[in-house]
Length: 379
Image (cartoon, rainbow, N blue to C red):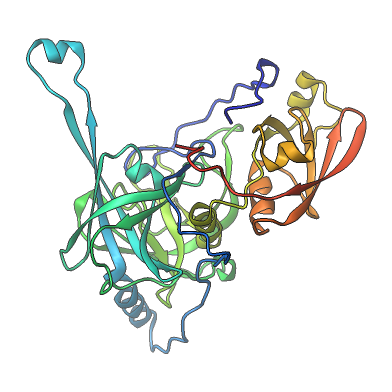
């Protein structure tokens, strides 16, 4: 956050590298809002419907049917980034360098609007975004909002999109270990490539190597995911999206059978936040543990530490301070910064939420009324 930080609360964190799609990684939470629908007083959540029953004779038939449902709405995303030439290049008459990145995405419906979901790292910093459908139609894209921490971005297509197909967002909470899943995308520019695997694991997994590897809530799969698959859908046998393919774990740079997707239930909440601008409370947090508690002189090593509070935010109005330790939000135990976000996202804009905190030797309960992100704050 831009406000409320101090040197006493700076904690150095070493993040082990992980091969991420087209080459970018998962960073801290960061929201980039360019626009959102006009506020008509109604808050409409992303679609959560599950598709109809599927009747097949073999697994092979099921996969064919799933791909048939999903592939028409899968798109190629090409981002163009212009980088200024260095002084040496300018000296010899060189100009700006143009770099292009390739990723995948898919079209979905949000409150009657046909938009594209992809990874943040696919479109980050792009001066131009081109989206190509399976039929070869091309559209200019514009980022409506992105969350760097979850690596999820929403892109709006310019021109008439009324005839474009959309994918149904399924329910990642219904996934089972060993369930068949299908990844569709554009690995290494091989258009509309289909790979098949199973759900290998779910829940929090270390993204990287070593004891300090960050933990993320993910779907792990052995369906082959490579560079260019980033942002594409992971679908179940009903052809519904259950995750967004985001990254791989690999010591070689190519797939070794360990790929990760952002669960679609988490994506729905992120999309809702990006499109509606909330619910927002205006705090930045960091993990708490024995070492952090000893360093900062805290009375508990549980929960998370408030690292910063935005001026005039809902959290500031409620009395939250830098250095407070959040233990519980709205009845949900807080164990890491991700659980803070989930607990806040479980509410709507305008809800009053109880924050149970430790401040020195005191335990307090503060009522925080969730709000919207100030216009242009994260630009």
